[in-house]
Amino acid sequence: MAWDFSTDPEFQDHLDWLTELMHTDIEPLDHYFRGRSPFDKTDEEVQSQLRRIQEKVKDRGLWACHLKPEMGGMGFGQVQLALMNEILGRSSFGPSAFGSQAPDSGNAEILAHYGNDEQKEKYLKPLLAGEISTCYSMTEPQGGSDPNHFTCTAHRDGDEWVINGEKWFASNYPRAEFLIVMLITNPDVSVYRGSSMMLVPHDAPGLELVRNVGVGGERRGHGSHSYLRFNECRVPAENLMGEEGAGFKIAQTRLGGGRVHHAMRSVGTAKKAFDMMCERALSRETKGSLLAEKQAVQHMIADSWIQVEQFRLQVLHAAWQIDQSDTSKARLYIAGVKVATPRVLMDVVFRSMQIHGSLGMSNETPLANMWMMAPTFGVADGPTEVHKDTIAKQVLKDYRPSEGLFPTEHLPAKIEWAQQVMAERIEQELLNA
Ligand SMILES: Cc1cc2nc3c(=O)[nH]c(=O)nc-3n(C[C@H](O)[C@H](O)[C@H](O)COP(=O)(O)OP(=O)(O)OC[C@H]3O[C@@H](n4cnc5c(N)ncnc54)[C@H](O)[C@@H]3O)c2cc1C
Image (tube, rainbow, N blue to C red; front, side, top):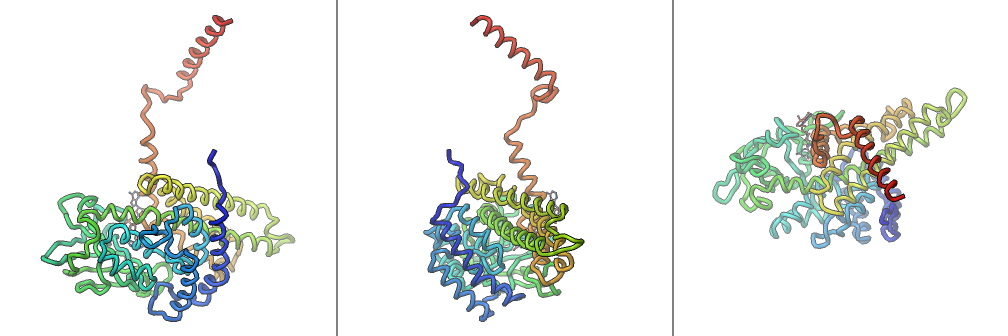
């Protein structure tokens, strides 16, 4: 019997160390550097504090551990990475301290997987050293969910690729040293076979920043999701990553593990909102009793606990599925956690805000920021509806239509069948008596 929900003591040691580091070193950065970004490599004050923590992480052997050892990481399985990300999800500086921040972690993964030696030396090495930030750009203004609408192209001209078209919501472009861009290199076949990945330097000639788009209440022009235009933008021929036409395959490699890590970080975020909810319920008194003694509040706590617990186990199970096979075979489970993430986060953060009353709506708790994050998980990396389509298609592969006019479980037929089975059994028993 191999069902086991425990963590082996050696790895638990790492998790305990991480929890302590989070409390003593990382979480203070969230508050001290509020409004400043761990991605901004030009912010020397932030970077020097981060470097101090990153050294500790490297000494412990936990740096960029989503990568395989031959690629410069620890080669941890997805379950281990999920458990680490659960803790890291409590702080916006956490992933940067461990070299596992998106989009850099996914970009490092595909560079390690598909990059050639020169590309690894030039792009992966400084990325793994934590010296640079990067960007991943696939979505276009006229189409995000459906790659069939992508029109941004690259064609070969001598020793160069020439890129034309637009990209939208390229997160982290303002601070990125380079972008990994998905481009149509063969418009005569489907995007699934006709797209390629290209490494594009931040200031490649012909790459125009139309504007930086923010989320929620961010001031206009101050966001970090860029609208980009490529006007005859030229990059050297050797900037193609992997095979020509392999763009979609590379994108899939990148997204699987990343979605599980996002989900587990959301477990950490939801758990933080839940912890706040419980503390507040035990601290605030109204109409003669504590909030915690009111049935309506107890139900909110119970519903939240159940959702977080279910979600946590679902994410760990999806991670385990990837460890058992690979990302492509675990598609159903990954899509499942992708769909569950915004729902759980929205429900739990909403209840926590409600229980905190006016304080919950204010800018004096982390709850409002968590609330803003929740819907983005329902859209980024593909919207919920598309992942639900995937789930249904995968699930239906295991089913067949009923053979007759009525369903297999139609009771009149079932009763007739049971009568026949039982009659034969009774007859057999009489014969044996
Ligand atoms: C915070 C954030 C960060 C992002 N970062 C990046 C990034 O770094 N790089 C990048 O390339 N992209 C990025 N994106 C873009 C993201 O990948 C796209 O937003 C996503 O793929 C959806 O595309 P869209 O926004 O064009 O929505 P659309 O494709 O226009 O879809 C809009 C809505 O239509 C509905 N819908 C879509 N398809 C279906 C369907 N098949 N069935 C039923 N309903 C459907 C859904 O409700 C969906 O939300 C980011 C997005 C967000 C919110």
